[in-house]
Length: 405
Length: 221
Image (cartoon, rainbow over all chains, first blue to last red; front, side):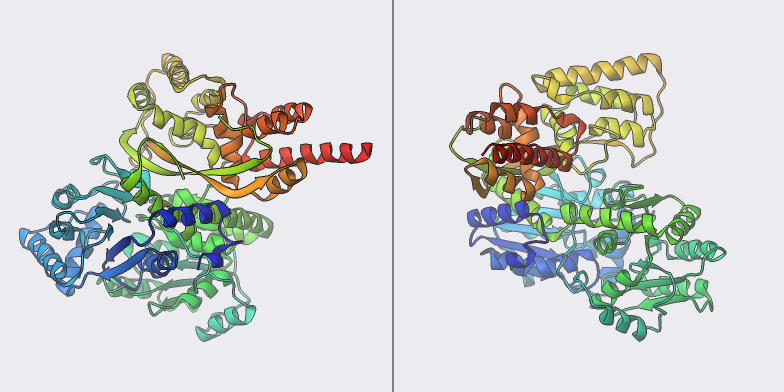
């Protein structure tokens, strides 16, 4: 499988992956998260698990199961970790723990390396067997300003992990000896990111009745208030005074996000009956559709006001599109302001930058090219696999700060 | 220390970031942490800055933060002017960084504070060094490799080597001089200031210099 990435990924990343896998041959690597569909975590695990297996690692991926009440609580936890003031009761925490306990009975938690993704399955660490492998908490959420109550609760479990991984430095807690920083990544050969033919792109546009001959502003994200879909519509309306354009807002439902339907309704109401706004609620596996929309777009937005990392930025940049993004979470790591796109702080800023791109095709092309190379060197799945294996190797065998392989 | 052999074996390095858990929201806080943070963190934020794709506005993370987050342009310029390769060890570099910041604070004693979330986060790294499976035996093969090798190899042999080798030179010219006996070519390549270029700029310079040397040699025959 690694052969598929030759010529795409930086060669050095592939070499070190092979070397690390030789050392870790036959060892078991378990990932647990809360959904198989929707969101960047699931997307990467879908590809990473077979990749690791093909190099001799015994990689597994398990899902924590829960009911609506559980996912309602964990969505609230997610929002509170991103700073929203939410009142939690002890019953809610007990229920979160209880569902984790039931899952611990159902799942085989034994592995040489266990990655627990995000807060939903975080309490599973209480059920780790003595003498089992290393346990890492892999947090994908913006933890820079969490609400206190939820933080105190999750710290009960956090202390029990051997190490943690955060997507960017500002999310780290400063509570452990080993808090690693590993940005997430995109997969260039997945259905969502592979090259498409003109026919494939046109066929998707036709399917949704989107005109191919007008400038398209696109935001791909879950229907979530932190992604500011209303702000995107406001920016589009400002642009519309000066430039002909259409707006496409495309998202997919996720089983762990019960608020999605409510936000979608708000967005539809706000868009009203504007025939140039296309709101698409795509099924969770609409990778080809998202790929085609990103390739058809003239300008891509990720106008988040809170963000874990915002991988849709890298997806669009890999397709040679300059991206306008909110300066939050991991977006500033991907958008080098003025070089691979623009960072914005307001609806007005987004509108202004959209107009710049629509009126300067040469600048749009140049920034798009820079962005593509920036993604190749920093945000491919092979870099993330390299980092995970490097951390595992270090925790098993590492001494000092320089390791000769 | 690079071995001087009849061949040159290309290696690369990659890093994994570790948070130190320490952050500064003003230049005064940055100064205080700089005095006590581990040398690994200073190494990462200065020498390893050259590993990253960057525009040439800044030459280390401290300068970039001062310029972009604090918007203290004068301080950013002064910090950018510190060439880490001039120093024999990290402690000397640390002293210089502290001197520059203290001098700035004497001029501007009430510096601003960044917005929450824009603090300077002190990190350090674990560095992994590995051969990439390319070994060359003469200048033509070396040229061929330089054109295509991963940028991480150029960082390792041209930048990082200066912190490993006693006399602050790089692996490439060490081998070209002592392995191939091409002293003049080695000196010409050493003429480029690594501090003033990106990795791709260095790649282009080495490539052109060797191409010219090979053309001269071809002309003599």
